[in-house]
Amino acid sequence: MENKGTQRIETDRLILRQFRIEDAEPMYKNWASDPEVTKFLTWPPHKDVDLTRSLIEDWISRYAEPSYYHWIIELKGIGEVIGTISAVKLNEKIEAADVGYCMGKAWWGKGIMPEALRAVIAYFFEEVGLNRVAACHDVNNPKSGRVMQKAGMKQEGILRAAGRNNQGICDEVWCSILRNEFER
Image (cartoon, rainbow, N blue to C red; front, side, top):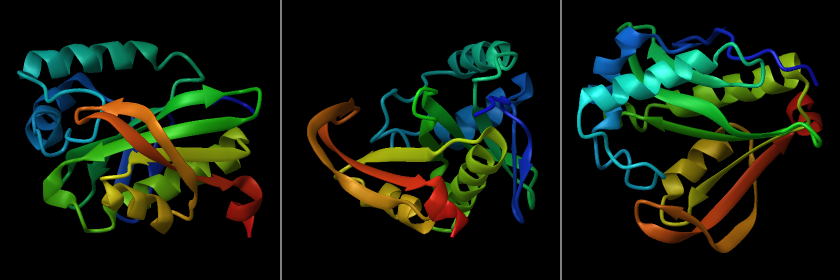
């Protein structure tokens, strides 16, 4: 395993890149202020763009760390940022990452997040040398689980009352993909 940090990744429709301070306004407008987007997340909707800007400043300051992985998702067709995907936990002892993501609801159901997740999974296996990539979702948010399945992840199980999000304590459905499964 070799940490390489948040490097630019391109797919057919997307650019995954580091945040820039000018992303604050579209991030706030497109997803961070939307209670429907944040319904199953661990952070509440942003009250104003100043909070969004402050968070982005913190994230930008962390890009010097080679073990920090946090991409903004830019849709090539419109040149606008529409979501984010990151390693929320990195376990170097077992060469594994837990991934989290969110995206503005205007782009839900278009195959965009599975495309972003597949690209991040490929980066983690091919460039960083991880052995496992996992993610979880609230049992009441099956659409997030479909994103994971479309990206090649398999459901491992349900951890009862193992998480907390904006709905309260929740059951977590865990999915993962191993490098040898990805390489097949």
